Length: 391
Image (cartoon, rainbow, N blue to C red):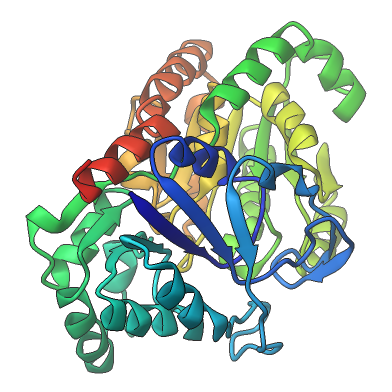
């Protein structure tokens, strides 16, 4: 079977999946941008210059589409307008096209090309229902736009429970829904976890100068409003004021809020708060290895949260806000972590305290995280895609 995938940008996260899928079908991946691939480019999403090695592209067929749009109506977001996707789909006569949503001009150009060529459309989006029902998110226009499109889509690859509910809300029948979870490279992260396990104490000293048995709270991601990193800092402040204990807080990442976070930590003399700046994946894994608890406090816009997958591969208890898309799937209350109402700093502090003060809970939650994340794998993705394609 000959299929294509339309992807906004190239990066190392999906390359192992595309390599695996290429062994099952004749796959070509179309990238809307080559930003940062093998060269230094300013990346709006990271807010800095990036340079990804292009080695991750070597195991699947791909093509970069010329992007004619250099602006976006949304701050700090890239935009795509790649008219050549039309000719690519027409001349190559694909059996199916996997599209990652419907938010760019290029996505819609691809839809219309597929209608013309009668190419099967598989949508692999990520919208969670819990964000759709927040005040102001629903609109008549959105329904009017999506319902006709969805009727012509061959299959929907849902990433988790909230995403499945979203499609059901827009009238998608069960026989068009296939579980294809958002996954990271579990094998690589688990192998690195096992390798670094014996180096944990040495890494704690080297990375953070920690020489005691204090608990390390970890955040990984862009320091932006959507991620709400200040909520963690304020919860940490409450813990230090009301429940003094040996804890450290580590922010791995960079972004527009870094300055205000550092200023707040200094103004209130918060001890043992570390800002590492941007870190490559190899470095990030070292921080997972030394951490005790992982937190993602994001608000609306965090449609999944891949860093939660990664943290769970390292056997970490996890705490997420109730707006994080992956929460209902990956975070089981009292089993491997907790959720909390988005923006409720007091509730977040209470969840942190509950975990870090119990050695048994830390160990039990960590083991459960490793078990739960096993299902969210590339192998599961391949099974779901093949089932959707009927092969």
